[in-house]
Length: 211
Image (cartoon, rainbow, N blue to C red):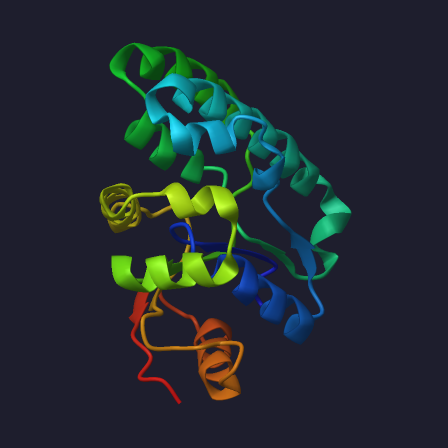
């Protein structure tokens, strides 16, 4: 496998962790999961976004930084390493959730931490429309996520699309996941795996037809 550090990204509920699990088993890879559920402010944020946005964001920023520092160890990439989020995603949520004054402070802290974050060999960006995301969020049943509005998810999708439209730090595979099921339809997963292994351009858009 030529890509030793792979990141799977996308909005809430799109299936990042599911795909990471499948890739991890297939490629005998080391896995790093985001520690999002440990954020003590997250549930309160979904209840009162304005009151808890800054605390939630700063906790995520520091937590993501500490996790990604573990990836700097040289021996880590002797085998494939797959992560279900990228450090830069933090900024997507910051600009979605923070006000102007909060962003000034956030940008100063982000700039100090971003310079030492490792760059992936490949980013897989999973896309889905808002109705698909809602269906998957309901299926996985995390109680605090059920409070998310359609409007918030629509804003999040737009923010992700904007970010990755301008992304050029590493090869990028954009995958439309509306009509695939990587868990129950093995053909869907193996078709995507072929796309990953044969990735030879800087940016590629892949729309599976479903198997």
